[in-house]
Every structure is written in C-alpha cells, then in structure tokens.
Image (cartoon, one colour):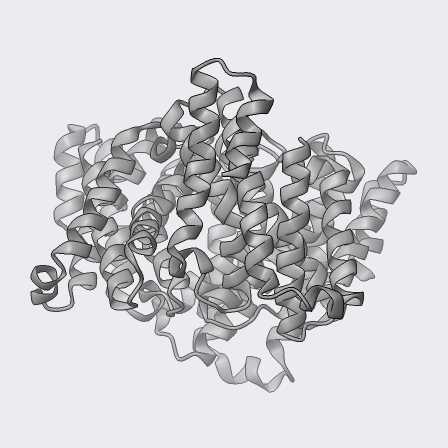
Length: 177
Length: 177
Length: 177
C-alpha cells in the first residue's frame, strides 16, 4: 500500500512536470498528474478483476495526485533544478509500482509469469499514458533500461514470494534494484 | 439512460466532425464517432465491474453512434456553420455524461468521491480518445473550463443523492450547470 | 485458440516492424510487439469480464509476442522484402482476431451485435495501440477496407453460430473473407 501510494506520488510528479513543460494551465496539469499517477494501477486492477480500482474507490490516491500536481505547478523552479526530473521520477515510480503491482497480482492468484507482466505494466502504464497525452513517443519505447528495470523489480517480488521470503523484504529488494 | 444516449450522440457528433476535418473516409469517421461517443462509458462500466459494457451489449448505443457519424459525413456543411462545433458538442456531451456516469457509479455502490471521479472520467474519456486518435493534445488538457464543468456536474448529482433529492431533478441541475 | 495465438503472432510482427522502422532499440521493439499483439485481446477480455485476460494468464501469448519481436529485430531485412509488411500482417491478424474475438464473446453470452462489435474491436485494437504509441494516425481510420474486413469476418462467425454451423467451418470462412 505504501509502495503503491509512493509510486502514485512520484508518477504524478512526473505527469505534472510534463504538463508544466507543455505550458498547460492548472487544471490540465492536475488531469495529467492524475492520469500519470493512476493509469498503471487502474489497468492492473481492471485486469485482475478488482472493481472498482483503488485509484477510484480510495480517496488517498486522488489526494496524493492532486498534491503532486499543486506542488509541481506552484514550485516548478525547485523541481526543475533537478537534472531531467521526469526521468528521475519515472525511475522511482517504476520501481515502486512494479513491486506493488506484482504483489497485488500474486494476491489475486495470477500465475508467476502473469504477476511479473502485470507488475511491469503497472510500472510503465502511467508513463505511457502521460507521453501519449502530450504527444510524445513513450519513454519506455526509447529507453532500454526503463522496462528492463520494471521487469526485474517485479521478478524479484515474484521469486521472493515463491521462496516464501518475508514479503516486505522482497518488496524492498525489488524496489532498490 | 436518456442522458447516456444523448451524451453518446453529441460526443459521436464531435468525433465525426473531427474525423471529417482530418479528411477521413466514411468508415474512419464512423470508427471515430463510435470511439468518441462510447469510450468514456466503456471505461466507466469496466471500472465498476459492469461487464459487458452497455455500449457493447445494448444496440442503441451503436445505432446512435452510427447515426451521428452518417449525419456528420453527409451534412457536414450544416454542422460546420456552427462556430467551433466540436467544442459545443463537447460541452453538451460532457454535461450529459458527467451526470449519467455519476448516477451509475452511485448505483454500483462506489463512494461519493469515486462517483464524482467516474462521472468526470465518463465525461472527458470520449474526448481524450478522439483527440489522441487524430493526434491532437486533448482539449481537456488545454481548456480549463472543460474538466471543471464535468466535475461540477458530477458533484451536483452526488450531493443531490446524498440529500435524497429526486434523482431526475438532481440530474437536470447537474446537466444544466 | 489457434486463431487467437496466430493473430497475436502476426500482429506482434506488425508492431515489431513498426518499432524497427522508428529505430527503437530491442526492448522498445519487444514492448511494441507485445502491445500490438495483445491489446485487442486484453480489451475484449476486460469487456466480457474474463479476468485476468488470457494474454496475462497464459504464458504462450507472451512467448509468441517475444518470438515475433526477436525475429523481426534480427531478421528485419527478410521481412522488409515484403511490400508494405505492416499492412499484410495487419490484414492477416485482423481476420484471425475478428473470428476469435467474436467466438469468445458468443461463448460469454454477449448478444450477436455485441459479439460482432467485440470481434471487430479485438481485430483493430492492437493496430490502434501500435499506431498511437509511435504517433501515427491509426491505419484503421485511414484505410476503409480495414475495419470493414474485421466486421465482415466477425459477422460471418456470429451468423454461422446462429445457424448452428460447425464452429470451425464458420471460423475458417470468417478468416478467409
């Protein structure tokens, strides 16, 4: 859960940053931060049959996305000092989401290959939607490391679960990788 | 139901108009009018777990979309006399969809925040898909009023329901706003 | 099932070819071949309420997509000798998917109109996602024949089922058309 909310936050930051770069107004930035932060999780929940998706039913996901959007919109100078901030947020969100996506898929009795795939999808889904909405070719298609990192993070969780490791330790290992 | 079909019709008009503007042939226009008219509703139904979506199972949604596509394709001159017709249809469809989306989400026991969010999503989903398919940055990201209107329309329905107002009155108030 | 896997393979080829054309690296090509090969089927499964989608739960869909991506990436010269290879793969995948999509929808008790629509959607979904990801206006919107072919293929299966024809014969007739 903490992984999921954390991933939503950093992906929402990446969406909002992309929105400010494309000179969107406040509401456009908020829509983009929600879309970037929650598309991956919504896709995952819809695919494992968990209706309604937590991003809709749990107000904290919405609150976290709006918070990230507001911070980015009003404190853009600070965020912009980071070199390539979208990429940094992407990498962090990716790790967090790949882990939470794979864990949730395992809890819903999807097989190990499916759980890895869903973890990866949760990780890259938000970035794809963000890039498509502002008409860029998705980062995941251009940057080799990106999807590989998501896949490895998800794989570590799945393997950890199969070896009956404590789930938090496995999640942490997956995220760090 | 009437709100839903009405929203599908005007959004399908907006999709078909965008299609004719991009010089698509008849079938492309029909695909775009179906996508614009029904994407929001399909996303809503998938998220609340109502399978299959009414846009698939109820032939009237398909009929209404095709009708809107044919009217636009063969009577484009009349529609084009309206100033910025896509925006006008968008606003009307948005209001109708935000209301019907929020009502349906409430009927499926999604909480009030989720119902507002789903109402808004139903309202803006069709326009987003339409704009992505013809490679434009979605109107909702560029026009502040747009998403705010959808959110307010959905909020009125949810609040009306919580106050036990007659649902039709609440729906009407939401749509007018 | 064979139709479904075959459709996934040729659509994955079309996705990978588009990826190589846009000079993506190996991993981008694999992501695009998975997206092109499985988006239509995932959308269909989500809409009929079959969670998780077979593309996630059955490892063969993933294997077939990766295989198509690897073949295309390392033997691009051979594939490129075909005239307009993306279009050829599209047509083949379309036929196979329209048939398998309509059959599966019928098995899940969607009505005949809905089954036709879902068959068509399964057929065109992969190509739409592929084109959106590499920022092109989807082929289905520009090429009249394309969606019509998918619709006819799906219609043949549905009509065949209603006339109690042997399902394999109907599927074959649909695919050939």
